Length: 181
Image 1 (tube, one colour):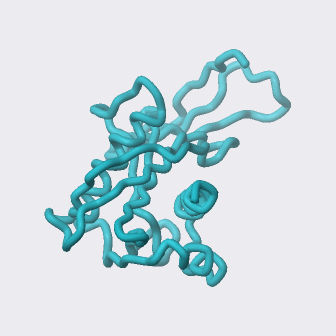
Image 2 (cartoon, rainbow, N blue to C red; image 1 turned 90 degrees about the vertical axis):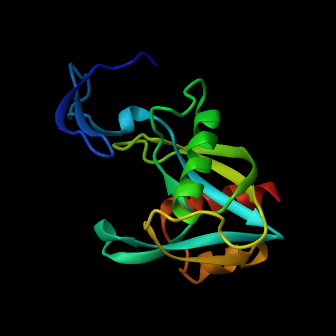
Image 3 (spheres, one colour; image 1 turned 135 degrees about the vertical axis):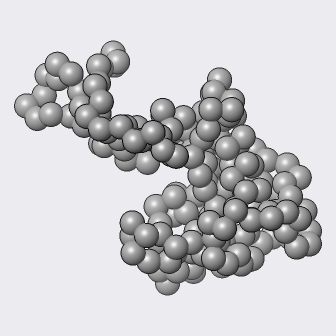
């Protein structure tokens, strides 16, 4: 598929940088729009684990008007490796984990990636599996999360079934985790 031309309709210089765009010269019978965040750099959702447990964070999500239990996550930034989505996502994921939780990563790799919304918000997001050190968080938190909780890996499916885990990023990451075990 050849690349399409888009023009900015609205730009917010951030952070995060946000641009709402419309396709120029589209051939469809309706206008095509898209949302580009952080200039299209891939984001990450982080599955931090140790001793067969994973970390969930409770975050206040003002746009959704509720607090949700989620895996840590975040946008890519200019310093992330841009050569391929998985490497950039690992870089972004490790950075976000440290910023949000203060946990110390020992190793990290990609479990895969997904497209957030193929219609209007085509952001690529990598699912990053991070082994963390035992003990309490080693560093300060950035204030983005309300609470941190360790959950046994075998409890993830039940948390989804009981609607404890409901956000799309964490649901997608849970599917990668469960299919890779």
